Image (cartoon, rainbow, N blue to C red):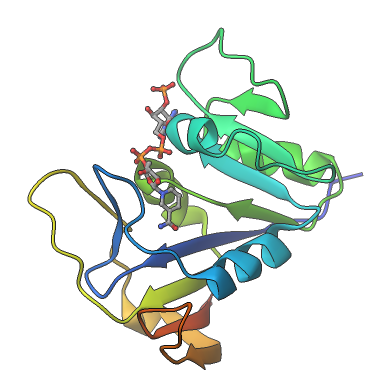
Length: 174
Ligand SMILES: NC(=O)c1ccc[n+]([C@@H]2O[C@H](COP(=O)([O-])OP(=O)(O)OC[C@H]3O[C@@H](n4cnc5c(N)ncnc54)[C@H](OP(=O)(O)O)[C@@H]3O)[C@@H](O)[C@H]2O)c1
């Protein structure tokens, strides 16, 4: 029997310039966004680049299945498994009967997964973070190919120094 198609979701937090991280890592700390990320990814199959996987060591919980994108054939993560391509990750997710693959970054992996994306779950931090050094960016997307289906706005408060919005976009199918 052919497995059902899984939807591919890219979940990311970025600033107004699509900045994901600088050489010092992610330049904001927004507890409500962290909760959103944890809730969205709970019990799901995840796709991460080898760099992001290394940063997130210790974060994974029972129920997470991380697939680690790498070109290194010998790479063996202590949880989940290594994959060599985005299509391989999608195929494994579908063979396991999962209905969604959640792509968690970083920049290189979002770039590789964007052509396969059905849904974007974007946290947009309403600020522009300066950096002269390394800047990891989320790929640009064409607004006309996506339809906003959900948006929640968060105001500045004592724990959140920047306003932000969590937005869901679905790819428009012609
Ligand atoms: N703001 C956010 O929402 C967010 C989310 C996630 C991560 N981040 C940040 O993003 C940064 C990391 O991003 P990054 O772009 O440097 O690294 P990354 O995407 O996490 O990992 C890059 C690695 O993934 C593998 N890879 C990527 N594309 C591949 C492909 N098409 N085929 C095979 N392997 C592939 C390669 O591993 P090998 O070298 O082993 O081949 C590559 O070196 C960190 O600073 C992190 O904090 C931010």
